[in-house]
Image 1: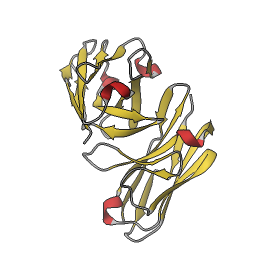
Image 2: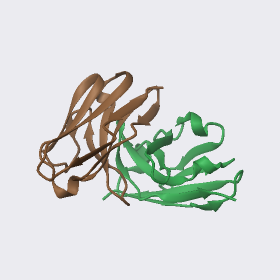
Image 3: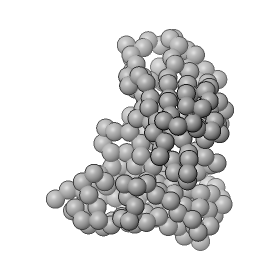
Length: 117
Length: 108
């Protein structure tokens, strides 16, 4: 069974940093592209960033470009999202999602990031 | 960037009714790159349909998808109580993913 367990969320002040982690199990993590998708409270889904299976290609939405960095450690079956220069509008539930072809076939339960002074 | 628009924003229906949800793209989308998700309150999204018309594993056959180009549709043939949720379409293009704003299907 695929399991994706996010952690690292919390309350941070504007301008601050946070690193999210996603521990994966139940599938071949090193052969799977992954992404982060977020959902602001009461709002829709927004794709944030994606990474290829070996980790040599990364992509991100314009809204986080230059501030967020996605990475992975295939030896630890873990996905990361380094978030710098956080803003109030980054407040959201951050999901880790396993990519299959051009879709996301498995999702974690999310970790909440709140940016507030 | 391709923008997805979903209509209507909210639908109030009764169990047993047929539902048709619309997803329109600002530019043509390959059918291979169009998916639908269901999200219930407090839960992560669940993949329903991929490739515009293929059901994901374990999805009941009352869910079906169709469409091409800029117009796509998700149909629920007969609403079950567990189908009341928010539905999102999603597309892939130029190495980026975008989601539609969602359609909420609630109980009338």
